[in-house]
Image (tube, rainbow, N blue to C red; front, side):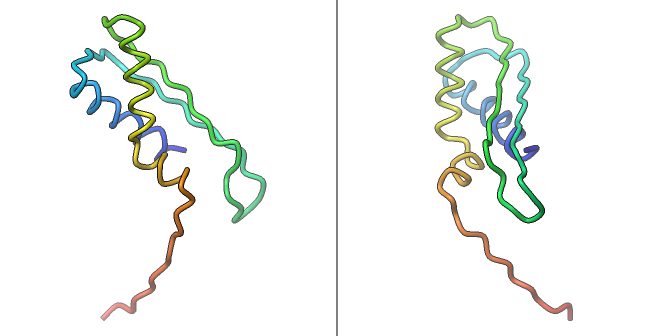
Length: 90
């Protein structure tokens, strides 16, 4: 959940600069249900609070656009396979 929240926060600042939306602060809280050891998380969700002098519509659009391009979010949503490679130390 930390990776999800951190990714979104970083991406929001990047997108804010691109969209010219001033951001004074961001709080991202990510949560999920973990049904058991080694099982994938379910019910993944996050809440975003943005402090900004911009109007509410601009902030809402910033939040939506950031959600659409956040890399960790898109990786999870796509269900990408993860492979483990083990190498012997020399």
